[in-house]
Length: 160
Image (cartoon, rainbow, N blue to C red; front, side, top):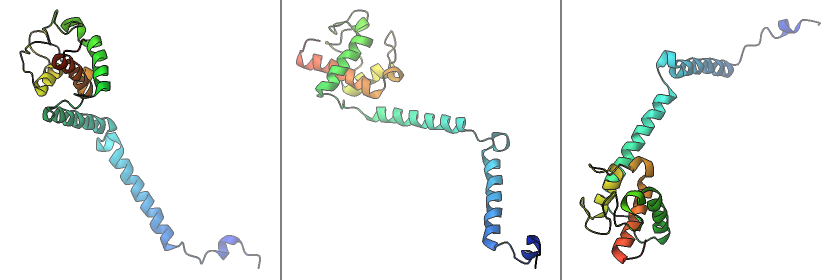
């Protein structure tokens, strides 16, 4: 009656569910290591991230190309923010009063077009002969806010 435990349990089999789970976990582990180890599969989070960034830039570029109307045109808060951005980024060339200086006047006729889409393109992409591109520096929304401020001065004769 004092048999060792090993002898008493020798006739019991390992449950089939446990074996399936064990071998499944082993197979998953081997797959995971093979799939996500850069030396084996070539996979890298940096590649995935770079691809996502490129897709986001392409989507943003497509979004800016489609948008031709200023979404902040009559929004007073956005116009005030645009005024601050203009003073910070644009006034040194276009003057505090938008009447020009190094750059052309913004209250008269605009050489590259006076519709919102063309004005956005001028700021975002820049123009030959001096206008630098501000698309990456300011981003879409901030450019539209600057344009809302410029348009408020141009259309309504408000003092800057």
